[in-house]
Image (cartoon, rainbow over all chains, first blue to last red; front, side, top):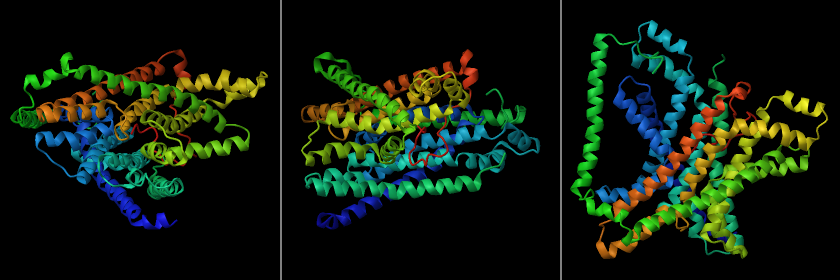
Length: 215
Length: 299
């Protein structure tokens, strides 16, 4: 127990790192993912192609590889990013592809009648997306987006392999401790992740029921 | 685009606008590409002899990279087989009539779904030695992949079994089958058919996650590339660094794309065919599972 108390500041900082990494990367993924989803349904061919290429590439690339390229690859072409910003960038860019897919399936799930009606009353492409389709799409995508968010929180652990001291990284750091002590730290790490994922799952469930459209 | 609902079939003016936007969009895409290439070219990263090392057998680079690819695939393959087998068992156990089977299995499945895979691997690799069990990076990586993915696959299979029409089960019982017969002869075959696309998608995720071996020092592609770089750097400077990284990354992407294409193919196939009509509803997670994982999202 003493060991646990001694290492409490490390664990607390690690937890806060995981939390801020998740929030920043989540924000980046949400913004970029929304742009990508809009590009994928737009009438402009190069934009559609670019977005499709982006999504397909990142969906088929392991997150470790993305990290690897941002931390070790970018300096080779003279872009040096710090470890934490690099981690935000890696997780955010990777997750954006999944956000885009979730949003696109949401856009496709909005009945074609809605879009037709929006067009019929003379809204432009941008307006019908903004005013009619996306507000409804965001509602249907709450559960898949929630899943993406929770998976992303768990994925931030990969930053441990790239010199960011977040929750998972405390384990190799303290690896020389005694078995009993290390088990306690492991338990704390697991609880740390659950402190983010369990309330998130609950919140998503609540939100899902509040915004659900009765059809 | 078969149904351009979001935009009208364009008239002359909006066609012109779209054309302008297309040109601008293409210019932006080309501009980004040109910028990257200029950046690479300016650093001399595009010179032929820097890339030639990847294909030169006398440097041992191609052999080592291919060997690392095989090692990666080996971990993934072993983990896929074990995780699928254990996942099937756990799914059936979680649907058991006996409380003392159902509840602990449910707890195990939910536990492994709730924590990050890397934490499972770290626990096996860094915490177990404290109890006198020392695993090699290979064993820790494989065991971690199996434990995590068996839980996810168990949920996929369970959802698949639950999605089979109740009448099938009732009918099987009515003609006098035993519980085990109902499961193995009636429910599982139909469930497997439905969940195959999601199952393969999860196996793609497993393959992607085998790259985590990099972090605990298993010689998969990335670690091999890194170690080659560490070998070359004192001798040739950064001459081949970028090329080796790109090669390792592209190999990963290529393998994953192949498996993803297989998943899409199976998905299309299972939607066709005479029996598909009965199985049009997709397998979704049952609503009662408090999902604290990113299941089905392919992340």
